[in-house]
Length: 235
Image 1 (cartoon, rainbow, N blue to C red):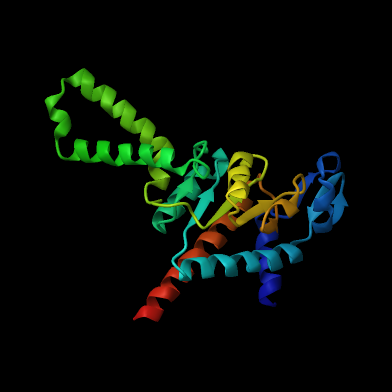
Image 2: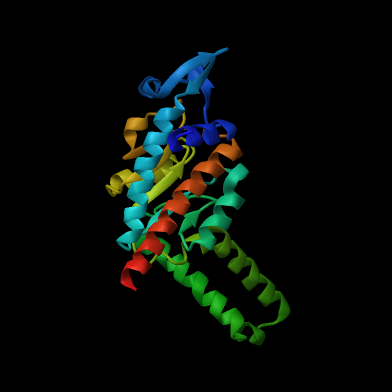
C-alpha cells in the first residue's frame, strides 16, 4: 500500500469523505466530488490527500521561517481537542468565539490580552489580597471571562502570518478579516462552500469530530515538525 493509499484509508475511517446533500452543494465544490450516494456527496479523497500535503508543506515552511499560524476552530465537537493540541505545541488558537477585530483591529484586541496578563500577574503576586472577598470574586469573574476569550492568543504579539480554519461558513468572520489583511488561509472545505475563496483548500467533512480532529492533528503536527527541523538546523 502506498503512502497516498494509506492516507485515503485513514481519511475514510475518519469519515472525511462525507459531504453535504445535493441541495446544499456549492457549484465550485463539484470538482472535489467523487460521486453521489443516496443524495449525499462523496468527496474525492485522493484530491484531499494531495491538497492536504500541499497545505502541510506550506505550514512546515511557515514554522521553519519562524512565522506564526493561527488556528481557528470554534465548533463545540472539536474545540477541546483543538485547544489541547495547540497548547501542547504553543500555537495561537481561537476555540470559543472569534474576537471581532482580531486581525483588522489587532491593537484593540492586544489591549485585552495585556489586561489578561496583568490580572493573572496581580492574582499570582497576591495583589488581590488587599481587596475584600466580594471584590476578589468580581475580579475572578472578570479574569475568567478574559481567559475564556483570549487565553489561546496570549502569545500572539503581532498579526499571524497565516490562518487555519475548519468550516468557512462557521468561521466566516475570521475568513473575512484574513482576506481583508491578505493573509494566506488554509481551510477544510466541505461541499457546501466556495473552495476558491482561500489559498489552501482541503476538501473534507467539516462537521464530524473524527474528521476535524484528523485534519487538525495533521496541520498542527506539520507546523511542529517545521519548528523541530528549524531547531535541528541551528544546532
